[in-house]
Length: 95
Image (cartoon, rainbow, N blue to C red; front, side, top):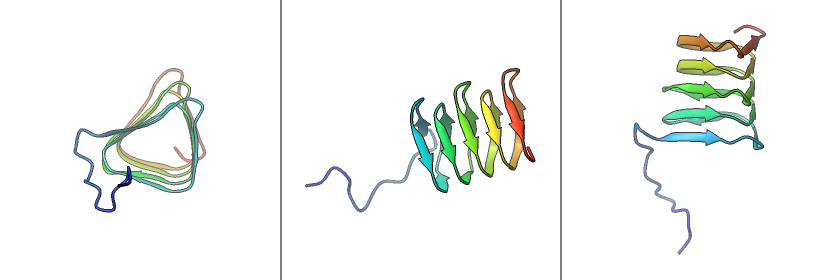
């Protein structure tokens, strides 16, 4: 029996995906549920829920979310119903 099953259960509405500080993800992501980034993502990130970039987090690429909260660094285009940049947050290139 393996740890990961082929018929994985869909994430519930309360699910949160965390990219912790020191971790790096490269490529496109489709996230079900919320996403919090304290590490680095390079690529397109698409979520029908909220995305938050922590003060140590960084996303380089196109981001689509219901709500986008930036306390870290975002470089790329963004599309969100609600966009909030915290005082320490930095945004460039089409945000």
